[in-house]
Length: 365
Image (cartoon, rainbow, N blue to C red; front, side, top):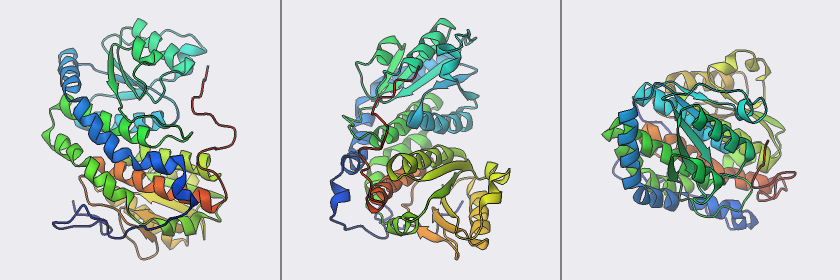
């Protein structure tokens, strides 16, 4: 595979091609401050969890599960999407999303003997999440909680706990805790699969996250400031961050954004993409790159307002990226996106820290 045309390369590959230097009200938001802490949070997590992850990985290899079920809501569920592609491609274990309402509302028993249940949460306090986790335990699953609040009810009920170590997060929109969830999933999978390549890639994450934060995605702000609707496209390991980006555009920017796989968008939604329709395409340098790039070129050819991160096309607005192993590129893409989203919210006259009708902890039943 080749490096992205929009990536930096050579001995200074970590350095961004362009840097932002903006001093305005947007950079005083809590979202901005917390998202900027992601590199330190990931570095802290990798050190603090090293022994714990090794022991858990050894337990998982001994268990040799034939199924992984994920339980999560919101941004954490987007991290679970990332987990699906990561675990299935690196370990070959089918990974499915368990709907919390099956337990919390329908109260239907599950059959999870010998399975692993990954529960992902920032707060660890949502009632439906806890009900689903307790049901999974009763059904015979080994419950592993990836949670930021170590003394939460979720941590108390789980068989194993991997703290995210993201630190306090007060902005309603999750940022650093989402990235910390992805890094924890990478860490666990690398040890579980005894994958040295993946482990090496993760070790590069803090430095490259810092570089991704400095990249200039202001062309995206200018393009999307007047928008009302858009698609966000990703595939494989990048689908979860496309889902996360679409959610953040709804939460912080008041934009109707929908995320699609570059394959699924062709099954109907493609009919909406015409002249000036905004599309944000997030592309990592793995086996999905060719198809995603081909779709971006098709969008641009239709006259769509195509924002392309991770590749370049003559008809698209290029958003710069940092060269890195493909497994961590989704983390870097969402880190650059968070800075853009914060600035976009301000450009649209919104407070990214106080989305209307939302609270930090959603207590779904």
